[in-house]
Length: 257
Image 1 (cartoon, rainbow, N blue to C red):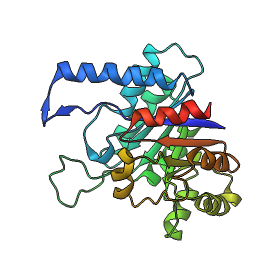
Image 2: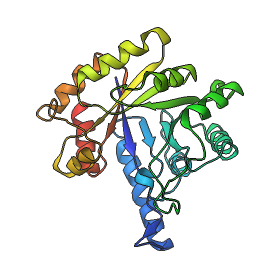
Image 3: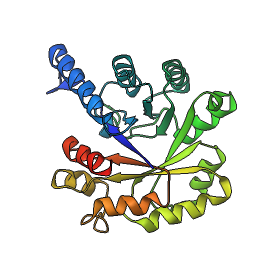
C-alpha cells in the first residue's frame, strides 16, 4: 500500500501584505518539506488554497518540487479549486499539469475565498461538471481526473451525478472509521471507480482542524498505525493529512516504513 502525503503550498500574504523576501523563504521551506517526504514515500498531494486563504497554486507548487527533486519515481497530484476558476482557466491548468507530468488532479469546490466580496460566494465552476467536460474532450486519456467524496453519502442524486461524470478515483474527506470506507466501497462497486480514503493524523495540534470538519477520530486515536493496517486491507492508497503538524505526519510515514 502507498501512503500519499498532503502538503500545503506557502501562503502568499503575511498579515494581509505581500512580502517577497518572506515568500521566497517559505518556498524554500516548502521544498525542504517535500524532500523530507520523499525519504519515506514517493507520493505527494499538493492542496489548493485550503480554507480559501490565498496560497501558491498547487500546479506551481508541483513545478517547484519537480524542478528541484531528482526522484524519478516521484508521483505528484494536485487539488484544483473550481469555485475560483471558469472552464477556460481550468482547461489551462489541466494542460499545464499534463506538460509538467503531474499524474492526477483532484477537483474540489473549495471553501469561500478569504477575499470574496459577495456574501453569497458564487462558484465559477462545479467540480463534477468540470470533470465531465474534461472527459468529453479527451483530457482523461492524458491525466487522472479525480473527485472528492464525503465520508458518508447522504444525497444519492449528487452522488450518482459524480459517478456519471466518470472520475478516475474518488478521494474522500477525512475518514473516521473502517465502516465508512466499506460503505463507500459498496456504493461504488458496480462502477469500478477506485477509492482513496483521506485520514487525519490524530494529535493535539490537529484537534482544531478535526473539530472544524466534525471529524470523530476516536476509533483510531489510540492506535493509528493499527488503523492504517486495517485500511490497507480495503484500499491500495491512503492520503495522510496533518494540517497543523508536519512533524507528526512525518512520524507516521517513518513508522509505517
